[in-house]
Amino acid sequence: MAKPQGTKGRDNGADGVTRDLASRIASAKRSRAAEDNRALANGSHDTSGMARGMRIGTEFVAAIVIGSILGYLIDLGLGTSPQGLLIMFMMGFAAGILNVTRAVAELNAASPPLPGPKPDAEDDKRIEH
Image 1 (tube, rainbow, N blue to C red):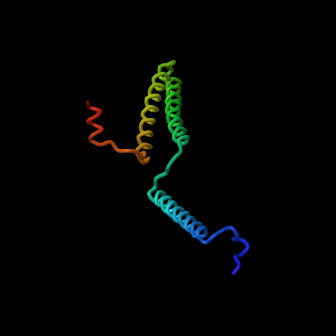
Image 2 (spheres, helix red, strand yellow):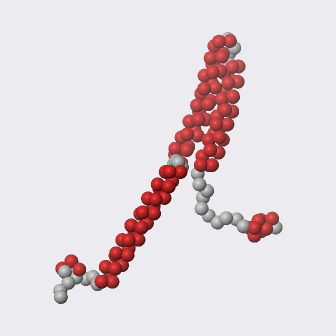
């Protein structure tokens, strides 16, 4: 019996390998989709580095700007020249630092740990000596 025209150079072994490869690819896609669904169900939102940087920078600048505006308004209301502005600027700066440390701690707690080797007792002994 003659082979169909589209399969001239192939043998049955190649068809089996192709089917096996296709089934492994489909299995990997299914497991990847299941992992993605599980991550969405857990509520873990993986933000990009750019988004993290923008959030942290915005929180820092906003605290300084709000402190400066409040200091300027205090100066206008009380008639003090730069004292209110300087004091509230420094308080805004301190609040910005506090906000940044809180945001970084929150983002670090939400992100999964990086894969890698775990230190063991032998590593601790080598470091001590």
